[in-house]
Amino acid sequence: MAFESESPLDALWKEYARAFQAWDDLTIARWLAQTLGQLEGRAWRLSHPLVGAYRLAAQIAHEKQIWFKRLATPPPAYAESPCCRAPFLPLLTRDVRESGLICQHCSETLVPFEEIPADVRVEVEAWAQQYEPVHAVAHWDDRQRRSTGNYDAAFENAAEQAELLLARVGRELAPKLLQIYPTVIWEDQDECLEVRPEDVPV
Ligand SMILES: [Zn+2]
Image (cartoon, helix red, strand yellow):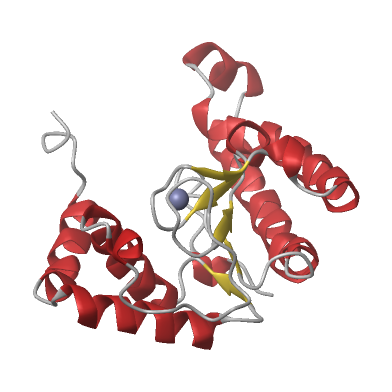
């Protein structure tokens, strides 16, 4: 079933991932540990090519249980994740209130929303609450769409608001999370509203 619903983009990323599948366990462990050192201390766009490469390798490493085998030592700034014991690498998305911060190794919840330190959580929550109704425009049903009179204009307006709100994540929220975690990744697009990373200036 999963394959039937696979998008062309998913298929492309699977093709990209083959490059890492050929690596042996030790090579992939060392590459991940070294790349974590290069990622450290910055908030990164999800769309950044280095992050994309890291995520591909990390998913394969998770399937091969690389971190359990302790083949390479990650930089000391990274704690061990409670979900899968990989180094702590959180992703901030618009679904943070439901899903918390997401582990980039196993894709499970790494930090439940309630466990984000309170001062930052309050700001993240306010942001996510603002984002929800904007994002929802992409999922309006026919009745809601008709009630606006001009759905194209409503969609366009929502996309513009989403661009501004996502830019705020890159400028304000991600740097605050960076005071807590060694590295932070933030989602810099909204596929439902057709907002691309290049539409989100920071
Ligand atoms: Zn994990």
